[in-house]
Amino acid sequence: MKKPLNIAIIGCSAIADKTVLPTIIENPLFNLVMVGSRSVEKGKQFAAKYKCDFGSYDDVLNSSRVDAVYVSVPTGLHYEWGMRVLQAKKHLLLEKPFTSTLEQSQSLINIAAQFNLIAMEGLAYVYHPYFEKLKELINQKIIGDIRLFESSFGFPSLPLTDIRNQNEIGGGAILDNLIYPLSASLEIFGKKYTNKSYYFQNNEELQIDERGFLRLDWANYSANLTYGFGFSYKNRIEIWGSEGTIIVDRAYTKPANMTAEIVIKTDKGTEIVEIRAVNQFHLMLDGFYHKISGEDPSFKNEKDDILMRMEIISEMYKASQNLNHE
View 1 (spheres, helix red, strand yellow):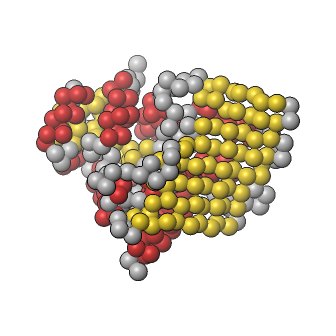
View 2 (cartoon, rainbow, N blue to C red):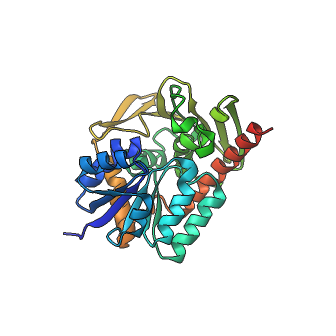
């Protein structure tokens, strides 16, 4: 049996509580030793729930027991705490998106390389086997030549108190949910796109971007990506080819008990390819462990992937911030 890796968290967020922490404590490859919180009350609650120690962020960084840290603070604080984790000589699993800008992401990657550490983004869906199957079907030309990749990720407006509505700590839809359709399109088509164009709608009162549209063009196909707050919930991929379409609903946030369905529609009729239910966060954590141990052959979520998507996210985010301050 492999030796468990001692891991801690910084930031007692809702996503940590809902998905990542329950998965960590069920994964034999990890031993959750501490939660770091700025709130003593919340830290105690999390520690009691997950049966581990609690302390401040600095307590986590200074602990000799901690080998790796999952950071789940607001996006605007990712760079600061990601950097401090790496400088404390601990491996880093950083909640998506990696940072707010390309420059920050490159800096973290450089620091990780300097100390021979792993710095990985917590983008779980790429580890789900349905996504590998989707790419396999595309390569098999099951719907002919691909012409258009369309994907949407959006949900209803958030409470005003939600951190994603707070500009000063990295709020807005570009940083929060564009990464899903963007990463999927780049994973499938590669980074050598020939043209990009985008539009975003800002909320002048909150000083954040609320929703938007990104188009990427390659030589023979394109991607139309829609994202944002203030929509009915939608989480979908549709790929349109010369001989049919492929559709996946709940493409990015499949619950651990949900069977994945890839719907293929051609002139021959409709076929549904089913993929067994899995916990994609469990698979992501496995990938993190195996990167640290040097046993991961998948090349998922590598530094080039992070920088590829952050180049676009960073440009759009900076443009939205400039518009806010005009």
